[in-house]
Image (cartoon, rainbow, N blue to C red):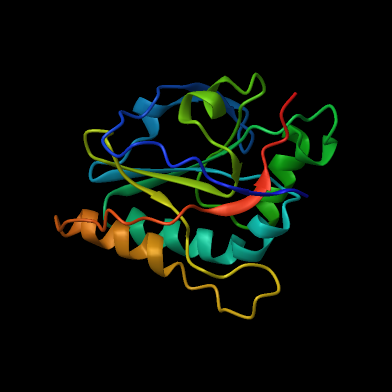
Length: 184
């Protein structure tokens, strides 16, 4: 496990389009079919990363809370499933079910989508407005495995609330930290 910060894609960047298989139902899903009316949270996660495991319950809570406010949540795993089989599509399906993911859990087998988003770590968060322009990228909150800080999702939750309420979002965003994406 290499502790890796997110790359902080520039604010205002348009969300790169994709068509990926949702491991929950084995159906092809596109960004345009999944985007929310008020915004879209795209997050890069995986099954085995201790940083993601640490925040799984909060990810589910955020997705449920903000679905009611017109923000959709999309999870993507781009890890190399050959060298990290626990992150392969079959295990993603099981993992999504076990953790009650209310959002699609897409598999980026070619890793092209992770590269298009300049994703670097798991978790890596990208919040887009209704026009699919990036308004927040950074950490969920300051909790990390073993640091004793409770998982609240406060940083990302604040950005999502500001988006829904049409308020400005803090431009002093801190990078997310986690395991590096397992590149081929």
